[in-house]
Amino acid sequence: RAVEGDKYANPRLKPFAAEAGIRNRICGGGTMVSSNFAVAFTVASLSTAWAATCRSSSRSCTLAEEGDLSEVHADKLLQSKAGTLVQQLGEEDFSKKRCKKALDLVFLVDSSGSVVKDGKIGQAGYDGIMETANFIKDVVKDLTLGTDNKSTRIGIGQFSGRKWEDTFPNHRYETVEIALSEGTTEEAVNKATNAMKWHHKGHHKLSDPMTFTGEGIDWVLRNKAMFPSARENIQKMLVIVTDGKSNSKWKDYDQADYSPRKMAKKARDKEIDVVAIGIQFPPADEAAIKELESLVDDPEKQLFRLEEYAELKKVVEKITTYACDTTRAPTPLPTPVPTPLPTPEPTPEPTPLPTAEPTPSPTPLPTAQPTPLPTPVPTPAPTPQPTICFKKPTDLIFLVDSSGSVGHKNVEYTARFLKKVVKKLPLGADSTHVGIVQFSGLDKYDNEDNKFHHTLEQPLKHGTTLEKVNKALDGMKWHGKGDGGTELADPMTYTGEGINHVLQKEFPRGRRGAKKILVILTDGQSNSRNGDFKVDKMADKARSQRIVVLAVGIGKDVHRPELDAMAGNDDHVFQSDGYSGLSKLTAKLSAETNAVICK
Image (tube, rainbow, N blue to C red; front, side, top):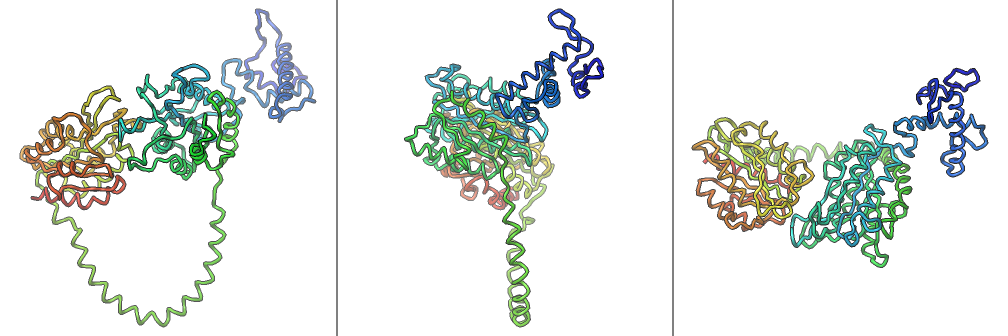
């Protein structure tokens, strides 16, 4: 009726009938059927389906009641869920999505050795990765994904780790399954979950993947594919799926505190809602339960304990409901109340009394004497002008450690530090040229045997202006995975090979007769097994070529004797407690470098 223009037709049905492509006739089973009959049949079918839905779920009856007439049912159904017939023509039905919410949701999935029982990959009840992938798919079914600021985006990462004893300090292991920026359609997320691979052997080649939960949380907070790419002013949520207590040995090796409790708190402090799903946690293991509970703010609402991976389907509805209904509460309430009260009263009374009498007496005495004395003494000391020498041709190379223990964040710290140092140097076509090389190495986890690796960030001939050097430093990428650079699985610290490389390849491309300086920055001891490239041997070779070597050691894992061997002179060794404290060395390193240039 809506199509044919029948005067008794409900006019509200007409736009939808046209949208569905129902025109003058509908073809079914080879028989031409009148549109009046077809629409009437559709109305009857949909009203019957609506009534059945009402009986099975109270949620579906918000727009219609069972007591309505058939055509009223159909009218309400077609108006409220217009996608029903359109979907039959091949278009996606967003009306079935239960939740439309602006949310950046990241799943962090345990991929340690215990996740798949007896190595039975792909078998239900045994393969925890497969069960987790299906769980994520089921959750996503109820979420409205998209790129706009009213929709949800999905990120997925897996975490595990290598045995510290075998690979220290390059122990952590994480993989991006889908980045937040890409998880904007159900199809893309499903494709990513279908491609998820267990970290044990096979694709990832880990013989015994560990459970490094704290490192995994730290990773999603730092990796550009995860929360660093989250949208501003959009709610963030992290769902951790794990089957055991962390067995990281960060305490034994004086590493940064990667305790799951501390890392989860760090996430919550960044206003990320953390939900944890613990699988197969023994009730008698109080330490494991305590660690699991420490991941969340409210264990009653945000923690789910299951006996096996197959039970994940039981919490799909709960996770979806939490994601849809929870809004992180702001805390601006206490600020305005106490502020105005104490301010106006005490200010006017005490101020006039002491000001009138004591002010004239003590003020002239201390002000006149101490002010001129200290001013002239410290001012000339830090002034760099006398130590900067232009038109003294110098080729300076920064050789930068990019091994597994560095991480992309510390590469950024290094870049900021070197910018400050270079700013104090006499760059110019006829003065100092700056070259930058990152070094690491490949070993068994990259299917190589003690193979040197480097990236040339800036050739000497291009490093003649501060602008060019800063641009090169901004473009530096860590050699490990997750920073968009070389993406090595386990970059080594092959310092001796790094020195040899710049002696063979970079300095020979510099200017003949120019002074040569090599500044080495490293956060650990060389772990090369090639005796031909021992650090002391390579450093001596550099000095034999009249290259001055300065060594910068970063963090607690540097080997002081190795730094001394590099520099050959105590005045040429500089140490920092960590990457974040490198800026404290700016004045010393730039001053010593300038001193060498001016000699």
